[in-house]
Length: 159
Image (cartoon, rainbow, N blue to C red):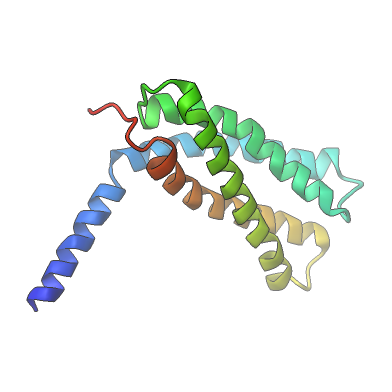
């Protein structure tokens, strides 16, 4: 019983540390960023590329635009508000770019074939829209871990 209790206490301590005020600030920034980026992505895919739904490049260009433009906003909001990093931008920018790129490729690389499998009877447009939605969810989870433990690790101002 003591071993279970110890494991339970460690798990609770981990959750309290992981889902702290920083996590909730990240979520708040993410909501603003998601509204902005999602609008860009779906408008581009459904309006700007409406004649190219059968081409997979419309999927990649639309979702990439979301993350290029959204990442610029995200970097500055998370650096100043979420993580309160006082580190020179040049020192964290490259780690941020690596993190965002890896998260994007993994999240959307997994989401596209997964949506095609799950929604195999749906149109290509529906599959791409569902893949973009799933990719967004995967991206958020990967991005938080990457920003907290790689990009801004050790650069935060203590509160």
